[in-house]
Image (cartoon, rainbow, N blue to C red):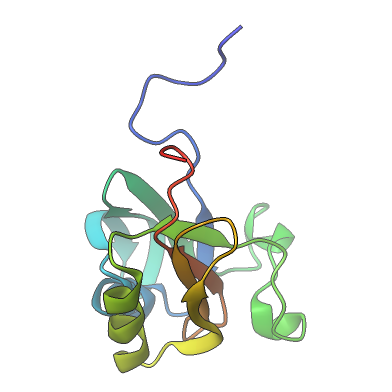
Length: 141
């Protein structure tokens, strides 16, 4: 039985940011995400959708008031660690690495050829979320 939806992207990472409006701008500048939709009320982002190729991330403002918000910790609340991260496939990992580094991304794992194929690197965004960017495309492997 196929339970997947007939859509462009069936798995969409969701993130929370204390300053979601600034994060949206930074993710565009550093990583190349484009705004698809942003639903905000003043400084509070209730829901945003950012696209990269045929993929998407969703994000919103961090809060402790909502049932959802009380279940999510920010990296600085748990020693800079993450319990999950997004992996983004890029055409040119070296160019993407240079762009992210120029925008101030903290490089955690320097760019290198990977044993399983492609090149990739890991970095942290300004609020501590960890990302992996690489040219390895498991759909083409």
